[in-house]
Image (tube, rainbow, N blue to C red; front, side):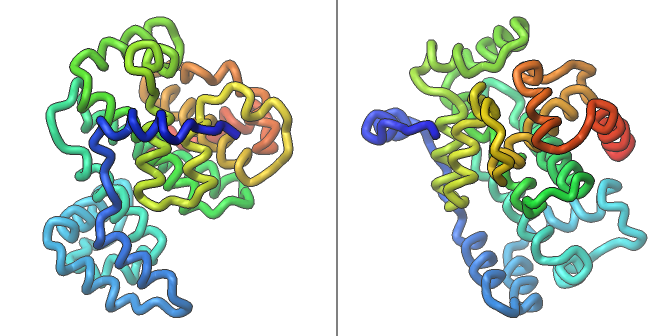
Length: 277
């Protein structure tokens, strides 16, 4: 486990605009956490936010969801998709909209990639029947790199850092530390904490570039989630850009071992995901 110097990190993070968890998301999740959630009440709460409602309906009527008829009301969406999917959609929309300003990278492209990784993690979780709730995998995929937009909003040269790292076939962590005295994993940890994600997810986000994370295989739920993330990152990179992800060579053997699949199985998963994407 990586331990942060809280005072030093608080000073670093104080200079960033770390978004706080929106009140409406807390209200929705509180309604979901009761023994028998009132779906009508949840639908009404979402419907009261016109912008959020419109964004949800736009997403679920897209080809990705493959609905056989157009959904025109949030109540229909809640009933058809279920609370976990609606919660994931609401979180996605609110997280994206919480990063505002002029950035040195395309935030649209960034969130496209984040969503693809989140969906790939869900896809992998459903295929391998792991012990991790699929909605947790989605959340990890969505949040794992959310420190990147913070850096892009603060530093006009951040795109150059990403280009340099990409040219070297490496992650951007070392260059971020060198130039900014912090990195996107640390900042992502603070965003996840600010949104009150479970501590184990926050810690996983903090360590998602830790080369030693799978050095000793324990088969824990955290390692399963980490392995699913690395497999998903590489899958998205391969399908979208025909390259392997920068740190795949560090983890590939351990990832497949933790997930309990062979290289052939992984290739099959990649091909199936490619068809969906």
